[in-house]
Length: 158
Image (cartoon, rainbow, N blue to C red):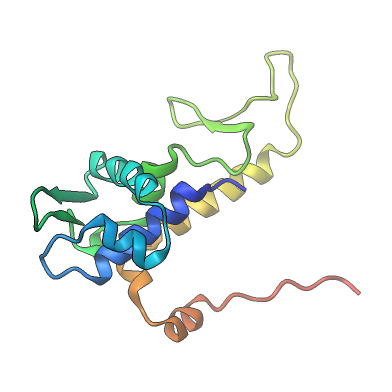
């Protein structure tokens, strides 16, 4: 799968910071122990989130982390890209400097990748979903979130 524990844990940290946001910094150790996540790993992830301008830190005995902006202004695309880098559904697909999609298996010898269209569409769907989802969206109650999804179940031809 394209996402690692960086995205999983990093999003969970962001949700906890948003859930507990009251202007007071939250110690990372508190989040780690409460969610059963390794503190050293979270420190690494929060450094990436801070570098991306998504969280702020406060030093001292009452120190910790807090969101740099309101949860409604932070998209999941920003969070995931800060943690994972460029989003690609499979290793052979990447984005060139000009924004075009490149398949590593395509060469200059007129070889056209037959699955590039599929993976390009998958990538854009994922990116659009991440861009359309804010951190605030993840704070709604579970029944409301499930109703908002309205995902059709996959059916197999019988």
